[in-house]
Amino acid sequence: MFLILSRESPNTLPTKESLALFVPELYKADTVVTLYDLPENLVLAKCSLFLGYPVQRTDDYNSLDYYRYILDWFKKEGGTACLGVSLSGGRGMVLGYIHQAELIGSFSVDEQIYSSEKEIFEALLEHDSDCKMEISILPPEFAELFSTYGFKLSSF
Image (cartoon, rainbow, N blue to C red; front, side, top):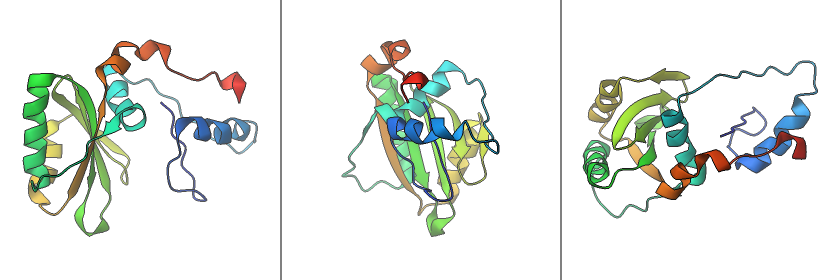
C-alpha cells in the first residue's frame, strides 16, 4: 500500500499515480521519507481502502449502530475492511481497521495517532452521533493472494 499526500494536492490518488509522483521526489535533497513495518493484518485492513469495494448504504442506522451491524455481519461472514468515519462539524476523519471480524485498531488521520484499543474507536462513535461512516471491504481472494500484489519501483 502506498499513499502520498502534499499541500499542493491534499486529496489522495490511486497507488499507481501516487508512485509516479513519489519516485522522482526521492531524488530531491530535501525529501524526507518515513518507512516502518506494519503487521500483515493491519496492512490487509488498510488495503481495503485501495483494493476493496465500497459498500453502498441504504440504511438509516447511526454510525454506532451501523458499526455493530457490520461487526455482527463479519462474525458470520469473516472478512477484512476499513471503516472511514467523518467526524461531525468537520473535525476530521478516523479510520477503523477490521481483520477477520475483529476491530484491530483505529487511526486519527488529522492527529496522526494510531490506537489498537477498540474502546477508543467505539467511544468516538458513541459520543458523536452525527458522524458519518463508510466502509470498504477487501474481497477474500485479494487477502489470499496478497503477496502477489504490488508495484516495481523501477518501472516509475
